[in-house]
Amino acid sequence: MLKKLLLALIIIGLIFPFLSFSQSEQAYKIPKSIEEAKEIGIRALYSVPNFLKSIWVGFAGFISNLWNNYLEPFLNSLWQKIKTPFEKEFEKRKPQIEKEFEKEKQEMKQEIKQDLSKTLSKGKKSLWQRFKDLIQ
Image (tube, rainbow, N blue to C red):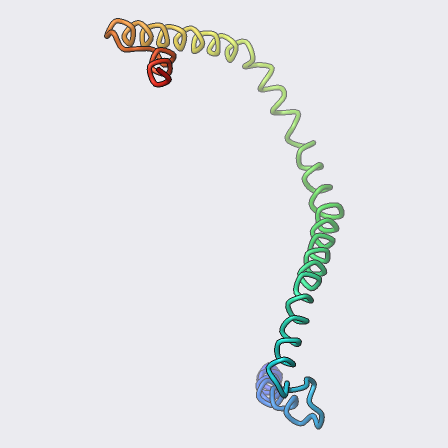
């Protein structure tokens, strides 16, 4: 059964491309002069933005539908399931986090003071002083 299906698909794949050559009329008109070719090119260029817009609108609609009907409900239900354990853990660790935050804040203040005192002790000009020297 599978062999017959595979054989049928191969035959269709080989014959299908040649079916377009059996059409009697040409789908497009060959330009007879440069002016006609220019006109066809300009029409083609003007049709590109509308074509791209239609593709974009279709794609945006598809993504919007996918998000609204499938992804958003799934992610909301998933969030509701994992939200409560995270909230409990956060409430447990909140005092510890606040203490660590204050500790980090004090360390940063000390580092800034040290860096500032090193910069001033070296006798370097401040940014404002350098700017004033540039202007003068």
